[in-house]
Image (cartoon, rainbow, N blue to C red; front, side, top):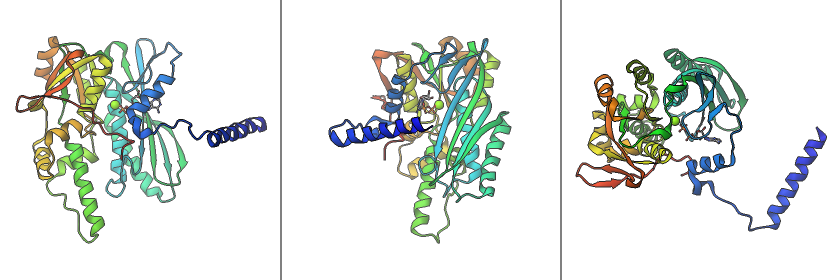
Length: 366
Ligand code: ADP
Ligand code: MG
């Protein structure tokens, strides 16, 4: 409508003039805020109006009241060159991982994913066959987890590929696990093992550098299939959620490990207003990942704490569920929830108490 475009034209012009006149106009760099700082700031501007919106911004998924059950909704964006590198990630793996990381956010609420909506922006650099491969990966993941692809959006892109997936899940109200309900004395548990996905990425990056310097050399990925699978083909932990239902345990707090254990511990502790003590010698690290870390001159503990992309579940349970969980679940108990005033610490292998810093992966750095 002409009036509308005139409004925006005038608005834009005034805006630009203001910018030119006032050279001191405040400009805050996003790199100073970091990804989490930006999200915190945006969420302080946003107010939820509807009583059905039980949880908006601030957890692995939003929670929407549907009566006895809640709908769980989460969305994730993957940008070529930021989150994935097509020089070593096959399209089928990309589709598989894009779906899995979304399912993981629903499992992190103790819910079951049901539908995904897939939006992609692509340039003419991509062929139909490449997109079909991407969808073959998506569909394989959906098949495994009993999820439907129920829609999406398609656009052209001038540079790389952008993927945005929204996942919808469901959980009985009483069963939902949020980040902010960890209780003093809870045991801190983690599924699977940590650091592998990060080490797989280091390996792929190293071989890419060697290849770019000398295209004649074939990649040497050696005996590292485990960590490569952890990076290229992560598995969201539906089995853990099914086990919780079977043994009738609801974790007090839960989050999935996308940015690294340290970062996720911070999310749980800050939002629950508690502290924690983690034991370095209890961190689950696969033997081959441990050895590879040493070979690459990396500290295996740092890989496990800060690596990210393992898509394991980090959760806290009350002491009364200890026996049920340790007898029935293949998980590691890595520490305990303490008082907020006690802070966020790790007891290292030489019995030193060291503070944990939240050095999760940050989209705005580098
Ligand atoms: P995850 O690592 O589980 O994908 P994020 O750190 O991306 O979670 O997001 C944390 C919370 O912030 C979620 O509730 C998410 O919906 C919300 N969030 C992230 N980015 C935005 C945004 N641009 N606008 C509004 N909410 C956002
Ligand atoms: Mg998450």
